[in-house]
Length: 79
Image 1: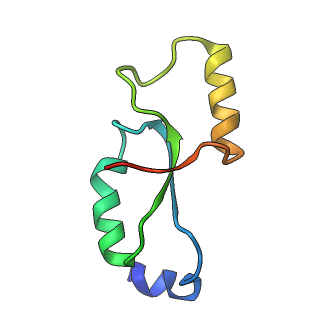
Image 2 (image 1 turned 90 degrees about the horizontal axis):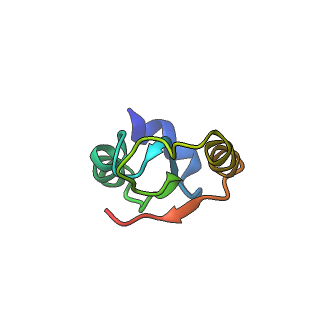
Image 3 (image 1 turned 180 degrees about the vertical axis):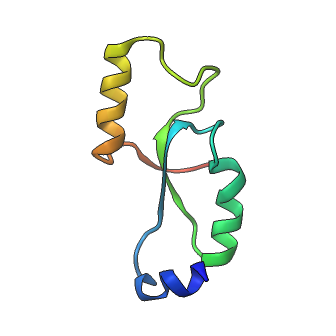
């Protein structure tokens, strides 16, 4: 069903976006499955891997959140 839904966007790049750090959240579980289903390498938009789910500073969190929302943090992920 997902492959059929994405079929009209066959030439588009696929970006997986999550608020949690790369080593937390759904990315590490879903990326291989989504890549198998779509036949494409996904791009990752999210926080870098970290030992903590948040930076600990409201100001730093706001800066990271803005970068994430504005898609400045899209990377070719390693998984």
